[in-house]
Every structure is written in structure tokens, then in C-alpha cells.
Amino acid sequence: MPRTYKRKTDRASYTQGDLQRALAAIAEGAALKSTAKAYGISPRTLRRHRDGKAAKPRSVVLGRFRPDINKKYEADLVVKIQDMEKALFGLTTKDVRRLAYDFANQMGIKHRFNTNNKMAGYDWLSGFVSRHPELAIHKPEAMNIA
Image 1: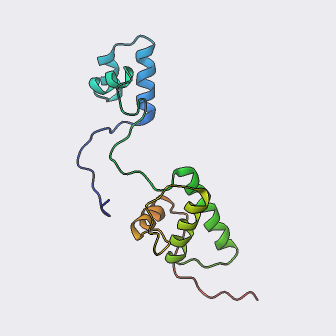
Image 2 (image 1 turned 90 degrees about the vertical axis):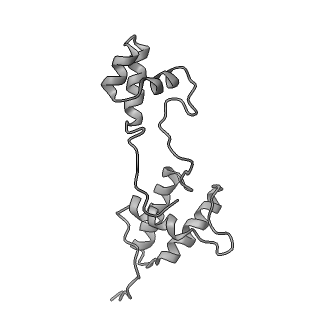
Image 3 (image 1 turned 180 degrees about the vertical axis):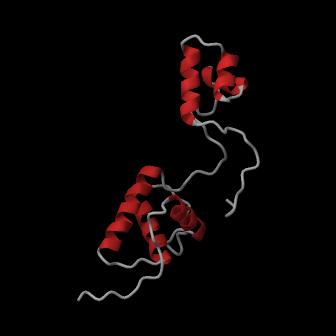
């Protein structure tokens, strides 16, 4: 996946909540075309989801790439990193990448990380840090306990 992807279309610019509400309105008896116009969803798309012919009905999914670690486990990893920072363990970017690899292996998550180096890739790290701005991962400074 490229590092600086810029979306080129407005395809599936609606949210999953909009899709759910539109399908609920159709189930209650609203007209398909007027509902599609109200929610900004293509009538053909609504029909496909209504009939269950979509690849993943009632969900908005674009592209073939999925995150290596899902949101629930990523939140656990963020908590683990923040706990280590509170305990004055300075984590470098390599430490976080190794931690992510170990975390994925311990949780039994299927991943695409480098098994020779036993660490996640730089692209994964940059995406992870951009998704979690509360983390401050940089070169640690020496701490004086006194």
C-alpha cells in the first residue's frame, strides 16, 4: 500500500450508519430511489445490499488491504505502550515495531510482518502513529529518578 495514497473517486462516500438507516427505511416501506437520493447512496448499491447480493451486506468495504491488527487489538496495544511510557520505559520506533510483532504472535493474529527481523514494517508504524495521535514515539531521553 502506498505511503501517500490520495483517494481519486467519491465512491462509497457514505458511512456505514447511512447505509444501515437507508436499508431500515426501505424495510419500513420507503421507496428505493427516494431513499437513495436522501442518503446519497446509489440506488443500485442499495438494491444490491437489500437483496443480500453484496460481498459483505450492510457494510461499507473498499479495497483489498485490511489492517494487520484490528481496532480492538490496536487499542490494547496502545494501552500497553502507554503503560510502558508511564513506567519510564522509553520506546523507540524499533521497539514499538518489535512490540507489535510480539503482540500479534501472542494474540494469534494473522499478520504480514517480517518474520526474519521479528518486527512490523515502517509503513505499518507510520499508519499506526497516524491513527493514534495520543502516542508520542520518539528517541527516549535519560530520566533522573531523583
